[in-house]
Image (cartoon, rainbow, N blue to C red; front, side):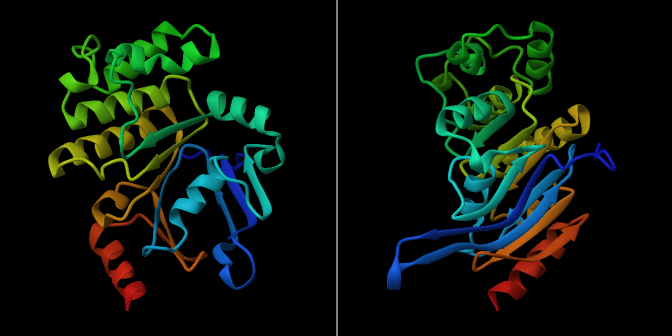
Amino acid sequence: MTTRGALPAMRLENVTRRYGRGDGTVHALRGVTVALPPGSFTSIMGPSGSGKSTFLRCAAGLDRPTSGGVFLGDTEISRLREHKLTLLRRERIGFVFQSFNLVPSLTAKDNILLPFRLAGKRPDRDWMRDVVHRTGLTERLGHRPAELSGGQQQRVAVARALVTRPEVVFADEPTGALDLSSGQDVLRLLRDVVDGTGQTLIMVTHDPGAAAYADRVLFLADGTLVDAMENPTPQRVADRMARMGA
């Protein structure tokens, strides 16, 4: 559901990120420039140490670039003060992590509604019902995380990320802790969310099969964006990663 001609949902302009000083300096990102259109699904891939996690952290406003700009729509988030950045992440960005990050003492419903509780706001009940239906959790809302399978817990995490209607959802290895069947269920769910709601998804993964659910794969190596692949397949992604490893 990419909107042609629209302002990019997310863009990075000549972003660098360095850690440390002197001989110990680590160049995690080196002049990365990319624009991601609204309603798109993008996978980020690369060898260990390529800068995937740093890319996600800078794009999501969890880390500040050393230089360059990060934009969410027309807002340059890399220049925001910490308080405004916190509010922006709460209202305009969603997160799905490998470890689910659910509160054990809360039910699935209360975990999903936690962002509203923290913000002191009321949820849109119609949208809440739609999100619960899309994630297949209608019969599981009263269960606590320990009473759910890993795949169901990740569905709760996805629902929590979507319920605030964020402009961009970031997923960090969302299937890394799941078995193959549960992982595929979650990936199909993420694909359905992008196609059905027009929300923008950026996913870091090491799995070519997972990456192939996206519209486009971006490949990082040594902190540099080295390639992009449209309409990926698992085999094409795996072949490209093999060439990078070689």
